[in-house]
Image 1 (tube, rainbow over the protein chains, first blue to last red):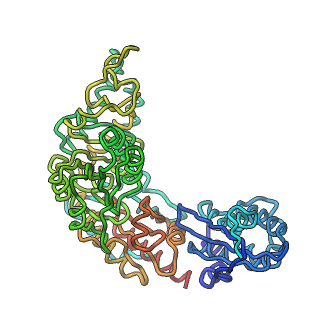
Image 2: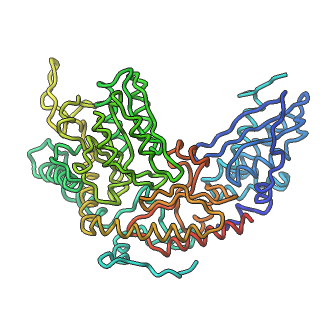
Image 3: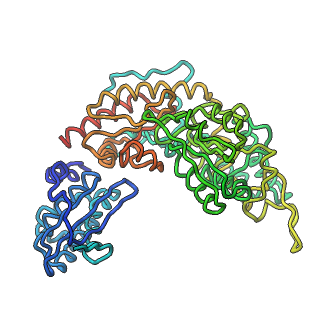
Length: 148
Length: 416
């Protein structure tokens, strides 16, 4: 077990300088994600233009894994359709939980593949997946807030 | 890693010999020797306790208080003998005052449901402190919902000490019960509970003390404290999990209705009515955790053999050393700096979330707790989502703290 597999340079970098770390003004979709065990709190914002994710951002506090995961997620989702985003959610779920199907095409995931080290640390899987679950909730209208 | 500081051991407390009693400590975790610094969550057990439990199951087990046969008699003697040991350990007046529970949490819930619920109503107040464990908050919130009573919270200061002036001010004719922790699990603060109990008594309130973090680390005399109830757990003091004690003054326990119904808590049952058993069995429905009680008794024997004063002195050394060494780690802030503390060092590290600290030091074989420590109001007060916490027992060493400090420096480099 090498910590460098978990805290890869790209993860440390996204933790130190999270991208798209801001609020998106309404109209928007948003949801809160909370991991009470470790105190991670995230709020994910999405703005859709028809079916396409035009902008995506997040705010909150958490461990390096949860912040870096959220930061990289926002970069990867911009310009994707809703169904593409939900498909990516499934792929990330497979990657983090170590299912075989994902391992074959890990390179297609680009930067997000850096999170595959998490699977060796079962207690940290939830940290990496929190933002993705929160995004899914926001996208599927779980706690969508739409104002003028 | 370094062995700069030789272990400073008091005469009479041979740490190497003590560590030899704890088989679990002698293992490698992630290719490093285990450094177990999570004792406030749960301590480890010496062979003397493990063997007592095994021997009970191997030779003496039967149900208690039920049979005339030899094994039932032996099991009953072992079970009630353990109760006497616990009574002597906390200096209760009688075995009738020692109720077995599943642990501190169940002990507090017993008082909440069997003492507070039948007595309290709208206008009554229960006073707790800001630094309580959730187990000494939620049972009272439930009682307040059930009865219409109000939960009042005494504030703490920046050092993590109770604001004694505010505590006294909040006491009044409406205060029916004061429920406070003897030692804070999240901060290590040792509260002035004797003084607080006297203040509460002067105001006419009953007093429950949560002693889960105190009894393992210092001599506790419930009669000297003057409280009505005192709750603590076996697993934090080298005993088995799943058993604890509620001490209650006999007079107050006698006035309380049973909590749960079932076998052992009755003298006679008919469909016309049931006669409840005497203390302490009135509060012990069902077949109890007999092996747990036997192991708990063995744990108390073990601690008495070392001596609670020697344990307290050794842990004070470990705390003094850990406070000094960890304070030298750049960017480290200790949460909880009370003048009187148990050997608990809660801390945050600038730029590194406690959860990451936990993983990084675990890779070095060091077990610390990270999170809110079941004390979310405390975290909120100090403005942190979580802390990392090193908590000590008499079997820990200065070298383990040195290793923790080295691992924290490594974490700083990794995140720099």
